[in-house]
Amino acid sequence: VQLQASGGGSVQAGGSLRLSCAASGSIGGINTVGWHRQAPGNQRELVATISNRDSTDYADSVKGRFTISRNSAKDMVYLQMNSLKPEDTAVYYCAASGVPTGWPNPEIYEYEYWGQGTQVTVSS
Image (cartoon, rainbow, N blue to C red; front, side):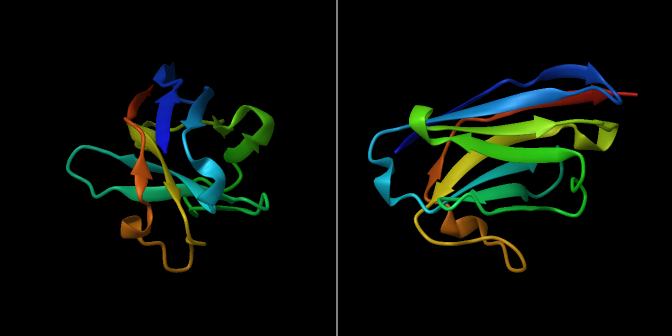
């Protein structure tokens, strides 16, 4: 499985961005796709997940502002980010897991496949 993330950029606080994650290869075994982010000096954290049954979940810090979705026909997963805040600044990664994973006990090690990161910078 190969994942390709794109769509990052620089915006002012209150702005919006949409990240895209393109999946290719043997994707039939994927159960969950998750968007993660890592800010300088911080651990990588899970932001949003979507299952192969379109069940979604979010970190408390982004609930109501971010929306994860997918287009199965195009093997794409998206992260729509609205009302962006400076604290959302980070490198964002999409990752795929073959098992159900997420809150209340998200485990990064359960994600077997990772895309390269895409930088999101939010200025105040």
